[in-house]
Length: 326
Image (cartoon, rainbow, N blue to C red):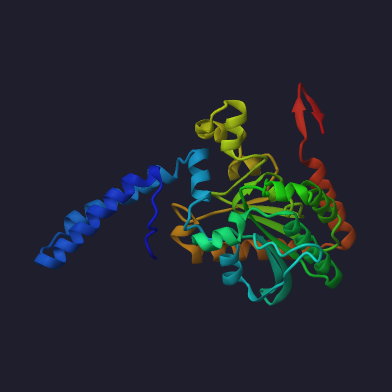
């Protein structure tokens, strides 16, 4: 397993210990010295420090892990857990939005439709994919593919990873809010099983535009929220630097979302995040997706739609002075 080359602020003690360990090993090789006792002591300290850091992550630290530049992106998972992915392009109205990727693939030998937000790795790809922020044509392409899936009886797998839909002038001119709203309505009525997975960031309506599904899964260090912590902080405290406080207040982490019924299952990650062992993370995702797909395939069309409706109706329910509101 390769060591991540990018270190978050709260991971610096681990980086320093790893540097000490590498230095000791190098000295051992160069001078033919037996430093096994010292190496063992540092390895134990690294293990203890990992447990201390990663067992008590704050909401803001989880947001940082969700944004880690080495974290696996949607197409990384598709490439690993699926076969024969065939990308389909264009919304048949305006353009092909590369921030939102879709197409057919085989998952566990069964045909599925993939709809995924993808950020890109290097600068050139990030710009080409608009940093994972879809425009209206992206959501219209996604809907076109989901309707195609419905026509041929294919389950839809959505991979959510966006800070939000693109808020620029061109996006507003082409009615991004209308495109997302139509997707919300149409996804609620799709007559095939649908599953969404939040693999990194799940920001606002940009995420929800492909997230109205029968099941919503989320990785342990992902987040799903109506607004980014920075955006919330700028509105409430007039200072984006208050993002850590906003992240805590918004209850946007996987454990809170599961407790509130917003997501159906939290997918565990390796210590430190998915980027520390992408293959293991992909294997866990594959198992979890198969389990939920098997459950959904067992339902009749009528039961599938009624169960989805009941799930959506439960969202937003709250209790006040013994009275349940919805």
